[in-house]
Image (tube, rainbow, N blue to C red; front, side, top):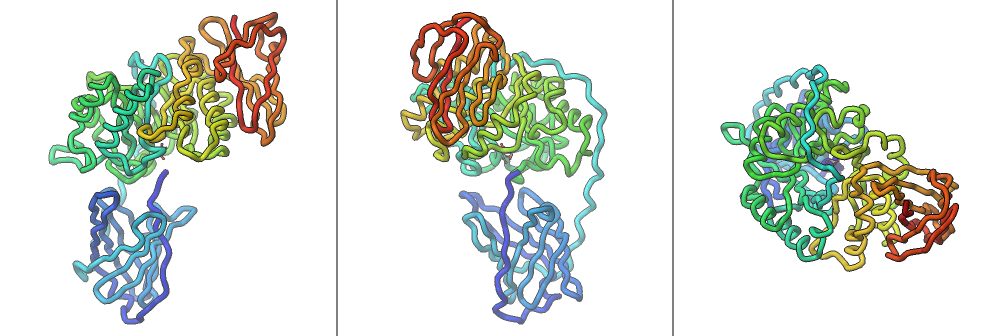
Length: 502
Ligand code: GLA
């Protein structure tokens, strides 16, 4: 779902380049985050100035579907970028150079040089979309008896993750107590992928010189290593996906010592028909391949909750599945994903297979500590995977305290594996409860409003009676026995989280 943002034409400076003269092949070398990438523009301009052809990066190839030359300026848009919001590539011809203007990344302007003036050969037609029959069930792999815990590179680092960052994060997790609090998976998200060798074996790119050595290092710290791919030909950031290489990639990861795979739908609609059976089959293909690899790997489906994934995620071998689009480090995003989009999915969660409302943003700076405590409490009540998404090398004591609150983590990791539900709602005030293995309940008293408020959890809403001992899981304090209800003063956007004993 992440795209390069490229856009904006600039006014004509010279009117020398005729429409036809743009026809040909143009190349540019672009360095992004230390990696050199060759970009190719293969332009085919007709007599009336319409642009056809395609453009390529090492990671992707896209047909131009619309475009125009007007004097020395031109614009075009590609197949991938044609939908709303439409993305337009704009540029200007200056003799044998083309300037393409890029917004939204550190590369502001790319200069292309002409390699030939020949009309480019059209790209071969796209492959027909494959429809697959619903697959036989993939047996449970025995992993993720409780929701996976660890760290993932995407929320903070995006493209800027590399071998050194991963090692430093692993070191930090040992030193700052994250590992001992239960965060064991160190997951590399998108942008690690290089190209396939002559035998089709996927290599990491230059950011990851030796994945096996990296896995050995992470394992030596008592941690596990995760990786990322797509059932489609390309990942969301445009890198190589596992389409038609599923078994081969699973074996490669097993040989490296990978322990966890996040498998992201991304470009799969370009090759697969858009129906549920086909999507199940595409995911089952990798589920089965992981198991055939002989190495236990947690299998995380990432298809944003489409096509009733809760109904079939476990049957294709999945241990968790995303239920929504991407989280961002803002209160609106987090509360929308957590409070609004999870109810109704609780029936699908249980030991071995979990709903995934996306990774944590705790510590990334866009929310207050009260909001991050709400985030952490809600995710624990939801039995959500707890994948920290911040820079653990420079975490503040306050954020570390939120992430490593043992009493809240114990709720998330409770052996019963029952996902919590909203039991009452009065305007901005909500009470959520989750039954625990010892017969008690974890209860969140949430205030989604912008002013402090008293929130009351009624026993009748939770389904209990009589007097019960109450413990505050953020204050780490016993609150004595309460009968019938428990009330707490809760700050704006905040939470009081308690355990009600059996
Ligand atoms: C999608 C996923 C994100 C992340 C990016 C990587 O947007 O939902 O979690 O993996 O792709 O490109």
